[in-house]
Image (cartoon, rainbow, N blue to C red; front, side):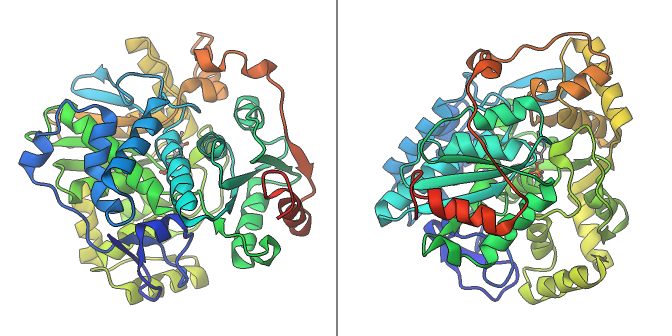
Length: 469
Ligand SMILES: *Cc1c(COP(=O)(O)O)cnc(C)c1O
């Protein structure tokens, strides 16, 4: 499989190369040159397969030429072997023909484990073959950092540095990062905010000389492998609800358009999906596009669903590329407009085309809490605030009651106690068994000034399993 850039000017890469690449050299994002397409018979024949077997069938075309089948199967079996539920991604019924797909049974209790557990293993496999080491530097406001650390802690050939804003992440989220020990795991608390951390990561990609030749790898959702891994659970859910003979609808709490883009790809690969709902919080750039054809940057609001607090949606460019007939020059033009003026609209027929599949809603904190409270009263289930946004949007935007509606349950509620308390759900939530002693475990973290040079010097000093590069 070959991968091309959404802006049309960067060289095509194979899977191994795209795994190690961040942004394309032309500023675009990599996408498959040709999407695989499965027949209905083929998809139907996968019903009842264990998750890792299904994952093999769905993802195999994407890695062909880079990873032999037997090795890929083994990697997938290990990856999904660390999940704490036998179904890996169980469905739980909430209401009439309405289901939550629980994606929070991985090590860090959020859906990001599906992709990052795989990414760490794929990196180690490819790097061992190439006899190469890499450094990861990532910024996090919470979920990504812990999932990336858990995914990479066993990697022989990777040193991972995760920057979080000092004293601005919740205790559970911080401890999920800082209590992981390993000579290749480095937690840096930056005396600044999340944007400061992200800016440092961006600048480090732009000028990598401080790494003395060690390549830098991206773990945010611009990395193609993350999107690829997320396609699988759309198939998994649909197969349990009568697909592919029956269509299914999905409501997806989203910020960077990564998770929902995977659903869009599942549909283009042959899975009958009749509706995808973009569910945002008050940071609603995606909703403003889907409802009014305005993709315009606005100020950032802190919400009860912090993992979706973004101003710009990095993966949206991948959808725009398809909407524009995969014309890289057109995307480069739109993105230049965006950079210059902070916004754009697309031609009416392209927007109408998107609206055939996508609906959207922005849900505020009050509605989020009301949904958590209502669902708790109706079912006894406690939703996390991100999932609650998906449920609220599903109930408002649903096109057909005959078609099963699946809401992606993106995190375990124990990660977001503030929202659960605000919603008035009196129940104290327990950490799952593998995390019960989280608050007693020893933490390892280095506090650094909000200074690019200081951060880069630290990485250069510790980037080779704690030793200098
Ligand atoms: C990352 C995250 C999201 C948003 O995912 P996108 O890929 O940006 O759409 C939603 N919910 C939770 C809990 C997350 O951690």
